[in-house]
Image (cartoon, rainbow, N blue to C red; front, side, top):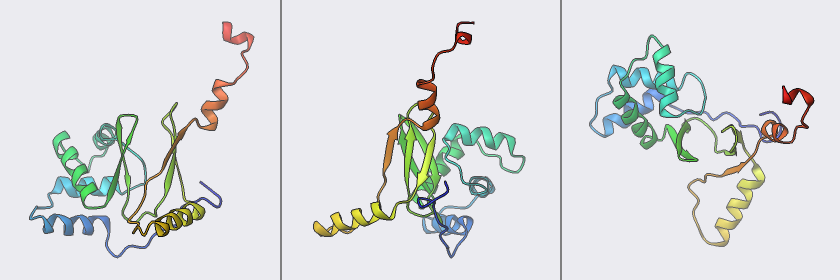
Length: 166
């Protein structure tokens, strides 16, 4: 999203793979080849996804094979490790990168399920001011603004044409 609400890069000291390895070791768990392939697959690009979408994209990836149970278990571990964030959008759990990604918020279209990410310095300042007023230590926040995106709004308000009757 171009403009003043765009997200900036965050520099991290460990790769997602290294961070996950560290997390698993702290829990006495092994980093299996399936987990490694899953982390590589998820962090290859930044997308919002649900478990079924991840399973479908894994089926297309010849290097990343994991069972449904492994995927669901690993997603929870990745959330617990601070690598992914889990959001409930209309009863559907959606995941996004959290590690190495800046604090940001979302606009969520209730019609097409599109998620638009944005960052607002003004919103962060307001959050800090309210927290200060209440002697509250902020550890993060999550804001999802629901509504209808421009594209869906235009579809709703489009004038009917004679061709619609055909």
